[in-house]
Length: 310
Ligand code: ATP
Image (tube, rainbow, N blue to C red; front, side):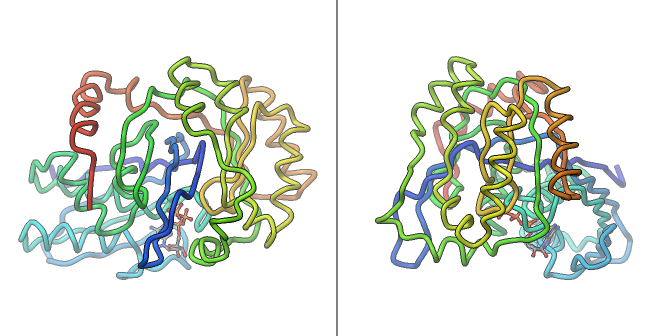
């Protein structure tokens, strides 16, 4: 096989809690992550000339080691000792610097794709360990589905898959630096922590309304204080009949969960026309379990036993 085309899907958080701070400044997290079906396309082709070449449909996106997919390819060649060459073409659809793990998912797809075209046969767990060297969200982007993420986000436990649900993503025309948001969080004065166990139970009960009702993200109050528009978008979602609404990651994307496709599409039109926001997407939750039930069952055991540690 000389080339492969992969989908790098985005993620949302159903919960995000900060449960501690390490001496090195890193935060200990507890969050429920969910893959959604909005994706970047990553085309990967073996080249005779060694080294990494990368291009994308966005002229302003870096094409050198500043691009995390480029670094993923370099890491792959370094770890495998293969003196190989690759051309990567990324078609981005996932909003950039938005709390949707857009870069991490491109890196994840690059590792998975290189493993296939170079026939290195590394296990998913080995690729996840490799991915962790690139970023805390990369292992999740390789595993995908519905997971509890602890540590800095890399200790993953698969949860009962989220039932298929419509998701409307609204990315306002401004971004928030993840580092600044975490630095601004006063962990001793958090107003509202999520009840993570309650959401895990709601997942077990396949109760989407209960999941939606209990979603919470401790970073929201920080990002909202910088960008009050985020709260206005949340209010908009409630007005449009969302079962629940929350900011994803450190923002600035806000999403709403909907039972019904028509209502979701109506909400999308509302944000485009009334809030004048260009980056609005209607998508659905993705379940690794449904698409590959047998493989996922095996994976659940491995992950539960070993976790994925740095
Ligand atoms: P996370 O949710 O993991 O914090 P994010 O969705 O907030 O991620 P990204 O879309 O990954 O953020 O982008 C963060 C930064 O990384 C941007 O400033 C962007 O220039 C840079 N970047 C590097 N490579 C990529 C890539 N392949 N796709 C998107 N952004 C990239």
